[in-house]
Length: 322
Image 1 (tube, helix red, strand yellow):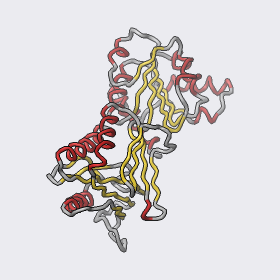
Image 2 (cartoon, rainbow, N blue to C red):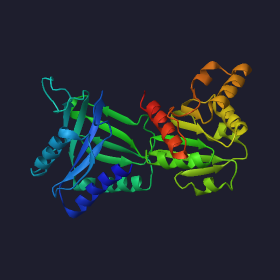
Image 3 (cartoon, rainbow, N blue to C red):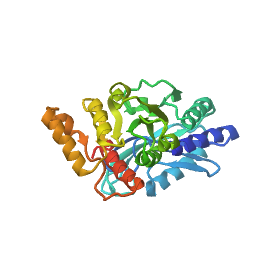
Image 4 (cartoon, helix red, strand yellow):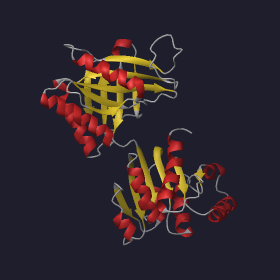
């Protein structure tokens, strides 16, 4: 989110200074494209740049193209398909990583200044909203009813439309506020997750010290998670309380929920007992199969920071469909 903020801030500052600026936006991507949908950068006529649309020779080529367009009067928005395959008959990017991406070159206009400033303010304060880019112009609304994170349509070709949810697209709920939670929240904050922390010990020093969480909730019992944690494809939950009993209470409140990710921290022996008890009680197998237990990649993590990395890697793999 900080990278996106810097890009929008450069556009805003350029307009205030009267410096022509171009917004470069990946509005569509497939396969192993290095520039994923939602990647963006800004280039202005003073030679300043922020952001990235995927790097490499392709990005260099589009930076040069943007500068050429900025030197022309009344340049218009344009879409450019890039195919990362040197055998493609046209639209070759010069890269060989396979995949495709569609890049928008959008010249920032004075009438866009207010919307661009709103976007910068929203990102700076970690507020959500919807960006709209189309052949008609640029817009921003603080509504949150866009069903998908990204929408791109191009029918007919000249009437294209791109919309994106700005702000946090995914929510992480960390159950337990100990040392591992502190390290995990710090790491996941850098990955643009909205983080909610839950703890039943309000005076716990690591819970109080956790300034990476966007919100902290003290619960009387972890059974309250049944109503506190929402369901959805953008909801991720990791249970890491101080012991078996509280982990068990938390999981029983969460197992039946429709979540993108549910994991629990613990030793292999603890997890075997927990799953054995659940199976004996008749908890549906499909609920247990969705549970990542023990959570984290098996990299022999020892410190809270190493544990955080192992969990983050597994969570990202699920987020990206691996």
